[in-house]
Every structure is written in C-alpha cells, then in structure tokens.
Image (cartoon, rainbow, N blue to C red; front, side):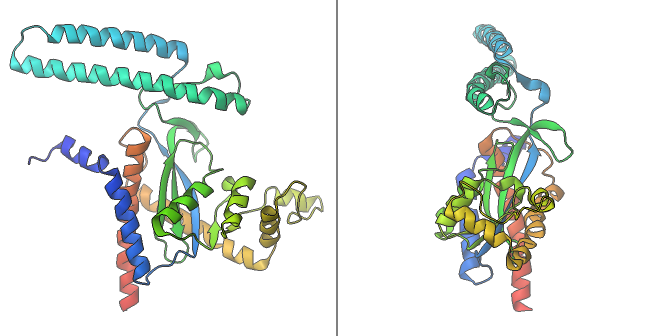
Length: 322
C-alpha cells in the first residue's frame, strides 16, 4: 500500500472509536498495575483555533445566496463532466465535481448549525437571532474568546487529568465558548470508561455552575472550585462561604468545604495539574486544528492524549522500578 498525504490524513482521523477505546484500555491498564489512581482529577478547557477564518461566518441571507451559487456551480460541473473528454481531464473534472459537492454540503451544514444558534442567542439576550452566523468552511466551529482576548473560530478542548500522576483520563471537544456545564458530562464519561467516579474533582472558576456542583455532589464527587465573587464579598464583610438563598444542600456543602484549610490545600494542585497537558499539546503543535468538524477534532485530541500518556507511562514505570 502506498503512503501519501491522504492515507496519513485518513489514518489520523477515521479511527475515532478505536482511539477512544485505546485511551480507556491504556488508562485501565495503569490502574490495574497500581501505577495511577482516579481518586482526584482536575479538569481544564483549552481553546484551539479551528481550520476556518472569521470571514467564513455568514448570516442566513448570505448563506442562502452562497448555497444557490454552489448548487448552480455543481450543476454546471456535472453537465460538463458528462462530455466525452480524455482520462486525465475526467479525473480533473471528477475532482472539481467532488470539491463543489463538498462545498455545497458545508453550506447546507452551516445553515443547519445556524438554526441551532438562533434560540441560544435569544436566550442569552445577545441580540436578535437573525444576527446568528455560521462558518461555510467549518460549520461546527464557533467564535470564542481566546487567551489573548481576541475572538476567533475555535473549539473548546476538555481534559480530565489525575492530580498525582498527571495522566489524562478523559477527553472531550465541544463548541461551547465557556467551560460552564462541562464537568458533569466529563464525570459521566469517566464512569463509562472506568466504572468509577473520582472522589475529588478540581476546576477553575470558569466551570462554576451550581447545577453541576449539585450533580457532582449527588454522585459522591467532592467539588473543589473557587467561590464566585469571593474577594468582593470579603471586602464587604460578607462571609463568602456562607449559604446563599436558594442553595441546594449539595451547594451548601461545597461552599462550607471551600472555606476550610484542607480544601485550599487540595485546590492548589489544580493549576499545575490541569495546565500540564495543555502545555504538552501546544508543544506538540496543537495551536490550530488541521481538520474540520467536532468528531475529527476529537480524534486529534485523542492522539494528543495518547502521546501524553505514553510519556507519562514511561516516567511512572521508571519511578516504580527506580
């Protein structure tokens, strides 16, 4: 079998289920061998540029116009391809038809994605839903606030990492621009993979969503997240760890816990743990996705997690035998 760009590209992105299962098996093996534990994990989100430009985001009227042009262009190419031409010309024409069909499909997908954004924009009071835009290059990408403060097309990569051994146990890629609401889905993923949930779960303030805190505490997971507006409350003489009207019993427990010295000591592990795999991904070239779509982006992140864990496995085995 010849190896070329397309072969390598297909291999990298077309085995998502295998890569996902390989992550589960490899981490489960480390668990079985006693090299790691899943008692304490930290989750963090990392925005990664999508393979699309900001100018590819268009409103519905422009998308409708683009779709009409794409359909007409495809029809013209298909008509031309039916003419009697040489073998080389047929290959070139087939490639043009395929590219035109893929563009039409991307525009159709952009129109569908845009429709899902309309109610979300109006719920968040971000203006009229008619202003919603979707990308004709990567319809599933979203404009997100990046680390430098700018807004660009991106995906939100989520890793759950063991705090003591720095092994990535969970991977997810979403097109939500915020981390709020991402903890419970990751806990569900960890339970599905390893039939157990962590005892302690650490995340930064961007993950604070009281519904998630309640959900985690209800399944026996202790949430370690900073209290919202703690500094402001303390400056006003308000106890930031006291219950607030409307708090569930689980949220009350979380607030009280975060006021203890033990919780503060545990939470200090978050930064080094959660940001370590992110830094490794950047060093391995994950500054921008080379693929389009959530599923392919997730495949890339699974490769990153496997590469990260391979190095961690070598280190852990060396420590165990040394």
